Image (cartoon, rainbow, N blue to C red; front, side):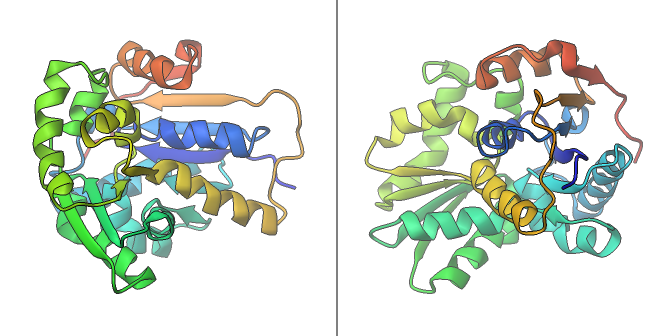
Length: 271
């Protein structure tokens, strides 16, 4: 038994997909969440900045006495995870391997699309993870530099014109490739699931990288007797380096209730 909180971090609101999954799978766990909205997007950053951001984000959460960390950020996972596992004194989980396993299991045709940030796409991390599961898979990947920022600013509706045109452009080559499974490789993207489905159709199955990562984390806690023994109403604490009200507004749409009272604003960490 371990009543310490789970620490989750992301470049902004995207990791709320993992929060939603933890609420379902681990209802008695306390959560401390950090969204680095003041410095997002992470996708176009050079590797030295991504490593520094990852160190600072995890250091902040370790300071909150978390028992385990979830990098709910595909960009961080694809570029900084080996480094983080070297320097941290507690377990850390990412989104790529669990999502790749789920996508490989879901496909019937072996044709999988992946959308993610530019940095994640360039790293080839999802393609490598998918081919490690099944070398025969055909993978079509697209970098989507605008989507995370649009999501942060509340552009998530399927009829939102600011979102529609870039989303159609990013998804066009994936549709043309005839995939039957689409891996949403940035935790921001499941917030756009309705818009994505409106474009690709209901025959293409969507895989949520944030939700899949929670399964691996939950299995670890269960196997290592690290679940919370406190069955009272769980606590959630949120920190953002961006706009507090804006963060809470997007969170309310996705989580189905206001978290404003639980959100604190902090200044972005210096480089």
